[in-house]
Length: 149
Image 1 (cartoon, rainbow, N blue to C red):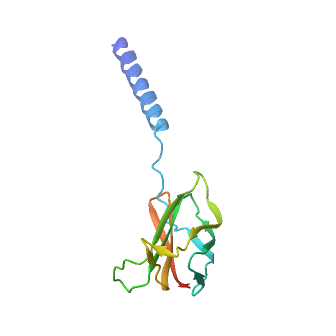
Image 2 (image 1 turned 45 degrees about the vertical axis):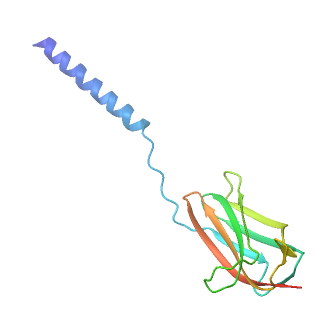
């Protein structure tokens, strides 16, 4: 009977130790990032004009409470939902891991004089910045710029 009591106590103690080790090694599920990042677009501003063949200046600050992932700039002829064959631009930049803020100040985007041998169409274009953050969500801001000769 005494051996049975020792054996029962040993088994109970073993189960307690295993349960404690298991619960301490489990990592809690990460909390979902529900706070959208902010896009503070400084340049271009709504209605700003760019001459065909010139660089487009982009200046903005991106901020997120957890981590930024990338940002994308899209420029398309304003056509109220209709698809056009006019010049368009789309490029995504990856942001280094661990960054919560990013100051962008660049002139990499060139407005072309021609597109496949034809003069680039002047007029209003939608300029959109989309910021992606680590929870694979995104936020965008759009304004209208003008392309002129």
